[in-house]
Image 1 (cartoon, rainbow, N blue to C red):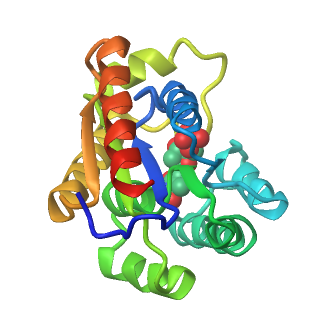
Image 2 (image 1 turned 180 degrees about the vertical axis):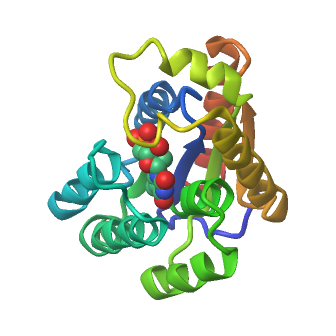
Length: 215
Ligand code: TMP
């Protein structure tokens, strides 16, 4: 496990493809962290502030006018810049832990892997928007996209990105796994094709480990 000092609030992100079970995992993690006595703020990307939630709408609504790849990329970073300034940095400065549903690894996966944006361009925007801010830990819920797609097709309506083809989500998955391989000290990869009880067991064990190390 990584580098952070005891008593320093942690910035934890949760990642995964569509239908990987992120919402359930977020709720469960929040519960477990709170139960361990940790003051945790939960938030999400794109979103988390009034302006960033407006940007989220533009990103996810299906409209007649197609979003260009560059627009999509710049909007996710625009939302992130608001979110960091208004929510993430202030919470960490107050001593709260931050649990965020998606962050910049999603940009490397979706805009990089999915859309084919050069990773060096994403890294440049990351530097501009985040400076020294990086997640301490990133939990990646990994499952074959065919399984995730089956899960989300039960939902009422798919948003603009959920409506992509399976090949897009295969590229997203591979980009996530590559990120995890490149930063093993930060990533915890959880096989979310396993039953929910097993995923929860791993999440609970992780919270125990983190609270023993950092509280
Ligand atoms: P959600 O389904 O987890 O609420 O996320 C919203 C969508 O936004 C999801 O399809 C992934 C996508 N997304 C990106 O394409 N790039 C990003 O940087 C982020 C944070 C999300």
